[in-house]
Image 1 (cartoon, helix red, strand yellow):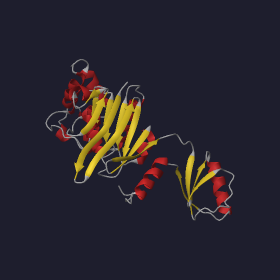
Image 2 (spheres, one colour):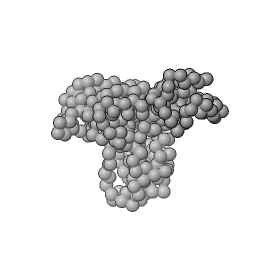
Image 3 (cartoon, one colour):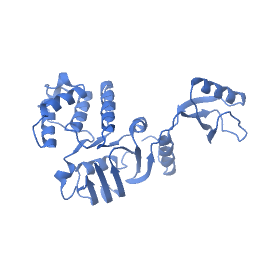
Image 4 (cartoon, helix red, strand yellow):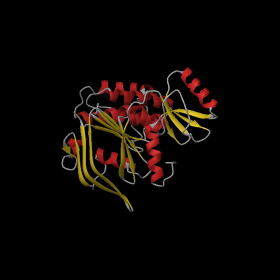
Length: 301
């Protein structure tokens, strides 16, 4: 079983900014999201877990190994894509993946097969032997994803994985995350501003504000729940054939077939409520916006 344990962590992030985590335990299989405004500490957490940033107070254990005491052993089964990685420009993509795989495995056995598989998985077979300085922005991002997963690491860390992805890259990312989610011994921690990505894949999402964990949201399945925005606030005498929850000028209701949606719209119209829009219900968006509002922060993050 793979695991990440963080205790009493403190890390200076700049003037009057400190990352503080009292306790965080993650065990496989798990996909964890990190959500928060810029500067909240998302990338800093990933850097600390990957071993690329030191000088912190507290304890981080990867698979039971203290990262401060045995860094090499602690991080050897971690793959990461954090911020904008820089690669040597005058080597090929295949050469880069070969190099990373040999370090992660500690052996050259099976590397050629693995590199070929990752190039295929990232849609870079035709570019494998080309120098990295010829890669487009989207191809570089896919190569970075390949570098994160090659060698079959137990723990994968992804920082804003959707940034700079081309259309093919988005398909590649979905396939990679699905593959990780099917592994019994796998942990994926990814930081993203994209609520849709986090809702689609994560078991839990950690909301960070100013270096502190504000809330950990369990991403339960909400079936066919919809959030319906109306033309005015809902009055107490609104009577519908479906049970509903009221949030100002919005109602949350469980709807299935299109016929149910049409029927509900007719009921609302008959009581002088016009439907402005209908969206899938998002508990993550609701909680996140509520936290930002309480903190007096802009929703543009």
